[in-house]
Amino acid sequence: MLSTFLTRCKEITNYLRAAFDRKPYIETLLERLNPLQQTSGQIRKTINMDGFIEDTASYELSKIRADLFQFRERVKRNLEKMMESEMCARPCRTRMWLYATAGM
Image 1 (spheres, rainbow, N blue to C red):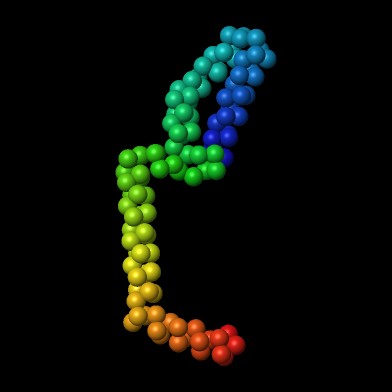
Image 2 (cartoon, helix red, strand yellow):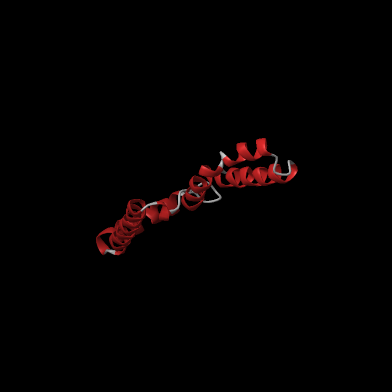
């Protein structure tokens, strides 16, 4: 959304430049928007078209998201191992049998 907004602002600026045929007054106003070009470029690199912050927004964010992904994978593997272990598998099978016979 923000990226789309910035794109539309740029389009409006280009339209006004063309429509007013570079009149000094409008050109002065539009030149004041130039500092925003650098900022809008950074925003576009940081926030994607869907409004989500990209992993590449900063090194710290990228590292945090990578660490979270690795942590989730470790938790998932450990849970899968627990579910496969005989200590857990037997009670789980018994519960599933009870639910099945009770009509749940």
